[in-house]
Image (tube, rainbow, N blue to C red; front, side, top):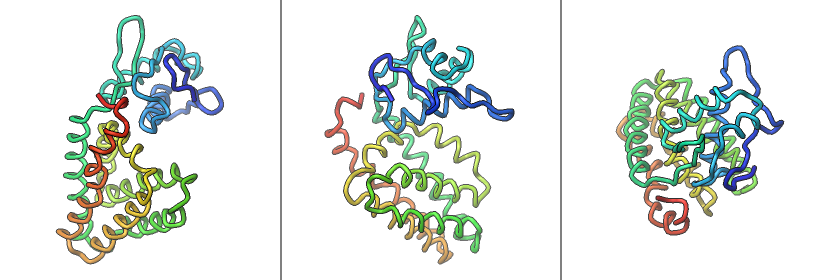
Length: 238
């Protein structure tokens, strides 16, 4: 992936795979967003719409739609002459996104604890087992991160709030980039795993207040390290 100014973006095979159910604009959006959140596309990278369309083998219309969604997420900003730039990480937005996530996820686990015996807990435990097998293997960090996201999605699904999870994810791009910077840190994989286990234990105990507390603790780690992360990556922040 070329992350320099004006670099092209493409799928692994050089095109966007469309289907009857997923429009090209959604696929372009997901691919570009994933690359921004993973920092494969760094802040201040310039994206040229015509080049994006050619790279993804689509017309400019779905590219424009995808960029509009990315602008709404605060991940890019567009200028005249079809030039779009990846935004720097905004600290104020990080705090807003974290506030929203904590409020929602603490309520999710509280409800799960009160419901008891939710199938979502069984699924979450299975995900934790898979994560446990990856701890310490830095080459598997992308898979570990995907499992982390799947773990939280399973909890939302357990209280029939999957759409809310999607909305929060879409609005948490700045926080997600900070988490990308934090995850490779020594011991981070272990702390994430321990946090997930503590959440599950609290939910299974039926103690909603404890489950909320464990979720709050789990989500606070990166925020506690935010000043240090900024200091180590000054050029990425606004």
